[in-house]
Length: 210
Image (cartoon, rainbow, N blue to C red; front, side):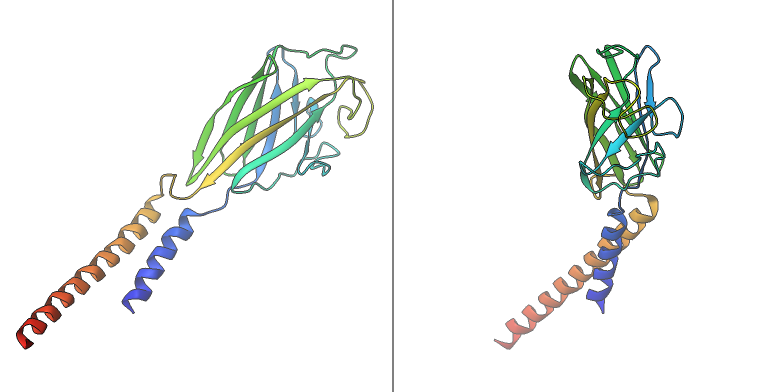
């Protein structure tokens, strides 16, 4: 019975610490000149997401969210060319902003063909970290402004982003989780003390018997 209680306390603690990361709900690419691509329907130009490659998540600029997984998450992205009629990037740098259903927001910058670093955010016991981002224009007509079909400007943007979603003991437990952990470790400590006393008593009886 004692062993069952200890196992239950530990399983409750571990289960609470392993809550899955929540959905990615919003993606936005912005440039300092005011250029914007995002996943909000018919708001500025659309940024189209694929995961895995070949599977479009918002072909009609209607993004319903995307499930995230524990560890690494990789997406490819595309957007219609802006400024119209040009072939080069509209801005010297771009900022990517990701938002999640649990309220976490992370961002990072791509400047001069280089990912210059991303931020992290912790919500509950899940930590999100942006680990990569790229966004460049080329002479390829892959998407239009609001649909993932060729059209509008013939020089579109393509790129990628990646982030990690880590849950578990590496994050700060919530108060309820702390209480379960204290209870579980207290039960383990009590069990070990009782086992130690029993061992000492048995040893004393053994010495007396000899």
